[in-house]
Image (cartoon, rainbow, N blue to C red; front, side, top):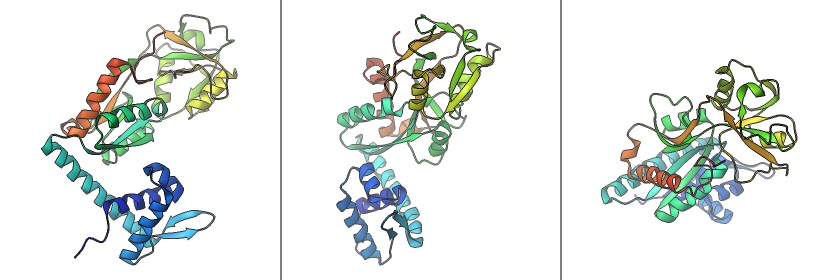
Length: 311
């Protein structure tokens, strides 16, 4: 029986099924919308089933058959990826698809340039990136939805491995006119009566609050946000201070206010940034090549946010 579909068609179908629109899927797979529409139409014609329900104002939603088809299509693509990895290992060649997760608080600073340099070095590899919370990273690694992830050593479970790359000490974010903004360092007890804006993400918030617990002081939290950009804008507009371990290249908040970074002094625990992965994952050629590439760019200091900033 002749093959009735291609892996590329399945890839486009899965992208639309997950995105809910051809336009969004087009951005994710970097293919024109007409090409994706054609691929889906060919799949529907070959199998004789409608995979989507078309709603003019609401985009596409999977039909009942489409939902079942999506599950199997993802399995086929996963199996094909395993074969690609196997072929690369046998040939000693880095090739195929690499699915990389990244903690969403610093993904915008790290992943695009790291991905570009890796794909330039290994042109037969296609990197798929996913911005995730720490909890999602653990879940996706266990379900093999990502091959590895750039993250912090925050509560790494015993069933996952962690390869450290860089140590990043915490610092205080302040508006430029704050009395502490001109200091060379600030101790935790000096912050206890000041309004704090907490980056309220799973695991991250526990780490920042632990810095106060260790000094037996309680912070005065006035705002909580899950968005790093919102946090920086709140600080820039004088709503309070915040804590972070990564500093963007610009000291300007998204709405144009200057934000000052002052090291947190005293006995405070730094975070280690590195790669989380399943045990034994580094035996896979693509993964080991990416890990080594990350180690090299950290040493060279060419990727912003991977190396601790100089004060």
